[in-house]
Amino acid sequence: MGNSAGLPPIYADTPIELAPDQVIVSFPVNTFLENLAITLAQSIFVTNHEVGEIVRITPDGNITIIAKNVTGSIAVAFGEQQSDRTAIYVVTNGGMFLPPSPGVVPATVVRFEVTKAGYPLS
Image 1 (spheres, helix red, strand yellow):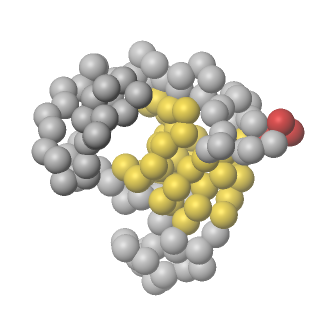
Image 2 (cartoon, one colour):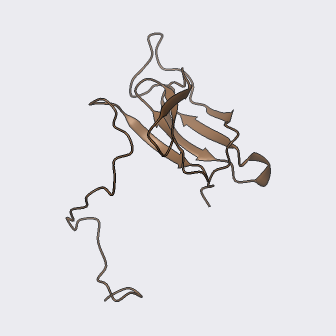
Image 3 (cartoon, one colour):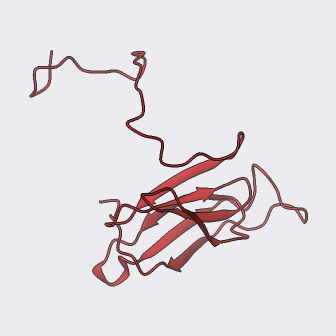
């Protein structure tokens, strides 16, 4: 059974080899990047779970830390409404995987205004 292009379906347990089209930026070994959101201008916002940072990566590979101390940052997405398309929302787990020195803190959802419109999840 194929799809509309006549190709066979690919299942999660089907091993395939994909080569990256291009590497935009590299991080040190064991960097725990968790999730990303993309702006209309093709910059990428990424959560760095390990150190609690949110970074912006431009199409030419420049990295800027836009937020620190976002403990357990695990997900990032642009707002859904027209009024918040230039804001990212970050979900945290309070450091459950890598607890800060005082211990696990409450999980949160935080909003950052980034002034660049992005693609919403829907």
